[in-house]
Length: 130
Length: 130
DNA sequence: CATAAAGGTTCCCGCAACCGGAAGGTCAAC
DNA sequence: GTTGACCTTCCGGTTGCGGGAACCTTTATG
Image (cartoon, rainbow over all chains, first blue to last red; front, top):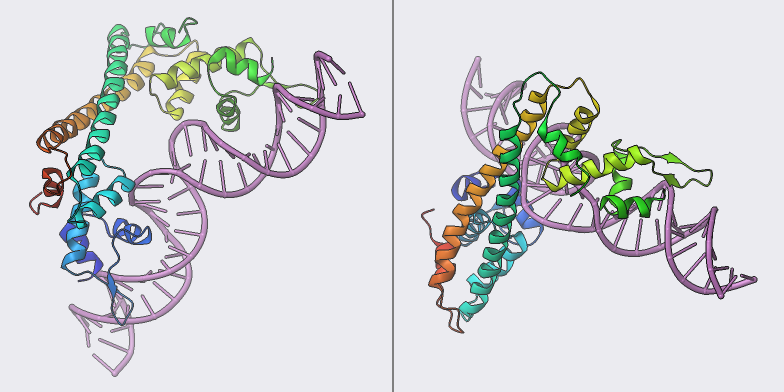
């Protein structure tokens, strides 16, 4: 199967698939003409990567997850630990963003947004006591 | 004022301050020996940048905000529009992250995380029907 | 059958916003 | 005078690709 069909199948751009090969994640065979040739196992991996990346795992996490996926003697604790760390990261990011959201919401709400220069947002940004 | 004192004052790393100069945000004067010399106006700008970046505005947004800050004929609508767009962006990011959070929370919760290979997380990542 | 379009290949640059570190000049203190 | 703490510029790396050039192969069409 050619790369564009594989891309269609797994939902990843061809560029991304080539990149994953370059960093050693999925190495398809090659035809006589040099074209990449994806078999069913390659496609499984690509779909796995698509899904993992879609859940926000870093590419390096995906590499580890993929090796655990293929390791039938894995400990589920290893998988769980990666997922838990990622979840904690997301929790932190959400908390940060919510804090920004609150501040910005107040500022945007206070600014009348007309053609006068008077602006609580700028005033806040220029305040000395942060 | 030397760069490390300026850094101390505004709360930005010296590396960052040099970078901001390189991209034309804050251009301090130079002493005879070539050292950067920050005056009170430069410090104001740096503090403004520190605060704006801290609220998550992109450096390019900060550039615009800084020019509005210095433009006493600005329209507050221009400031508000930037802040509003940024806020919308944050709202979207929070929504995305919350969705991931929900999914990951379920998966992490379902995995017992022991030394057996049986793992709902891996099974989900390997599922065909996403 | 010739040719054009659509696919494939490699390679290299660019993004955002810096950080780390090397090589070298300057300054204050002991 | 020399040590150490500054300062300078420059170069490379980060994450995860995307865009595009230059070139080859396959397929469709007149």
